Length: 377
Image (cartoon, rainbow, N blue to C red):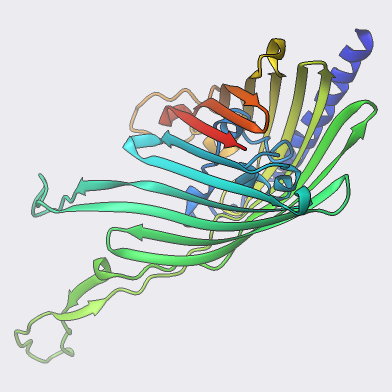
């Protein structure tokens, strides 16, 4: 028992150091060159599964199911049988997000191919103008989507790698933009004594820029006459605004997961991860998952999860909200970043059905509920 406790404390300390030290180093100095708001298509960072949401920013190393299509394509190579997943959650202000994925092992499981899609947005919102503050009868919609193809391979019994190619479409009203991107991930899995350990390295959304064009950018202009020349009435001339290209939200992730307890039906996994985006401050997170497998040989399995993600950019007490109170305090522990969840699955033979739930507190923006349904065969 003492040996187990010591191992647990050491693993927790190691994961905390890996997650927190890089983030602290980023905060040295008084200036920040973080490109806040400098990327488009940020729906690409919304995740893929309730399990991933409940484990916060610390899941890339542990992902070995179909949701690896999003979190770490290399983890997909550890999937031995076909699997599909459908996930959905309501985001802030009545927006919604849906993710679906399908993974198909080949060559006896040495290689895996997968397909996934994600969609975020809202529909039929009234248009308000200065001339019609109550609405002019028109509506607009926003829909952002991506389609992705993934390939992963085991190069040894300890190392796998994967790559994803995705097509991204961003529709804001009638303005549209298209981009291409790559995800690349590696996964190292071995044993630390008698306990499994997994490490991951992932780069997401490395690709072209989004540049919008469409009828919503059409305007009418009038030519200004030279100084001293009498202006002659004229009809506005049609013109179209030209937009700048915006980079995608590139994300670099390093993660570690250790099974501090793996005995019989019981498994306890501790996770840690450091994330560095190109449009925000770095974040660090840690999580824990307790799984109870095949309870009483019934085929049912249970899992309980929790995590906390430290996001310095969400510390908003320095921003003036016109006197509205906020719960965030810079440099201190807040409820923003807390996530919890659980899962229930049933397996018989090669068939498997699973349901997962995740909840995350987003501070001023409230909370969100994530639901995932999985089927394997």
